[in-house]
Amino acid sequence: MAPPSYSDLGKQARDIFSKGYNFGLWKLDLKTKTSSGIEFNTAGHSNQESGKVFGSLETKYKVKDYGLTLTEKWNTDNTLFTEVAVQDQLLEGLKLSLEGNFAPQSGNKNGKFKVAYGHENVKADSDVNIDLKGPLINASAVLGYQGWLAGYQTAFDTQQSKLTTNNFALGYTTKDFVLHTAVNDGQEFSGSIFQRTSDKLDVGVQLSWASGTSNTKFAIGAKYQLDDDASVRAKVNNASQVGLGYQQKLRDGITLTLSTLVDGKNFNAGGHKIGVGLELEA
Image (cartoon, rainbow, N blue to C red):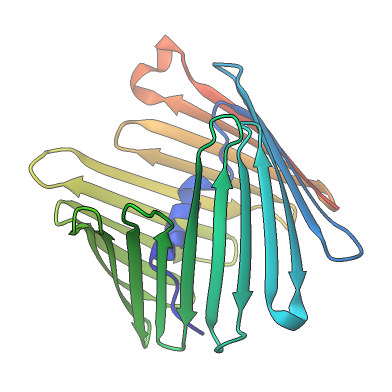
């Protein structure tokens, strides 16, 4: 199995702090698949403070014989997105994709060509935006050996002829343990640990700081599986923000998520947030 992409390094720990929480939102997700293999994903949420509603509709169709995937997406900001991807055709592990965005109201449009290659010990990704004035080239690579992972990510601005991103990552992963450290542009340092302590309990720790400042961020979170259909989550950071979540599978294809964010430093002042999410799949 190929190592993860650079953007997926440390994902297990990040999921502990992000999944199952919908603070300040009423959220609805619907997924379905037709008999012909077309996938429909509809998502929407309403911000409880501003009342703003955002929604999106995505369709995906796969032609397995040719390794072809066609994805189209529209959202309530009236932005259209299209992606055509081909995988494992020219070379095993190679994925080529072309994507484009178009906003009819403003006339803004952009495109991007992406290349990804995965092998047993290496994962490489690159993309180039379609800009005649001078494209921005993003590239990353991750090397893996006996559980150790080393990654590098860079971006080159051809208009200014200089590197705009220079990131390094180092980590170690096993079936139940993931360690991730990263340095972004030599100024931002971060690290995370994911530990599956049992079949029911996952624990995550995050730490980050920036050079030249005393601003350090620290958080610890956990997910506990009560049974096959229910789980609880909790997280707390050094700003005394406490997040709690409960997820219940009501029946096949219907999952309810409840969450709340409590400001421990200003508990009596109010301003705490709740979130409700409903996922439907058919």
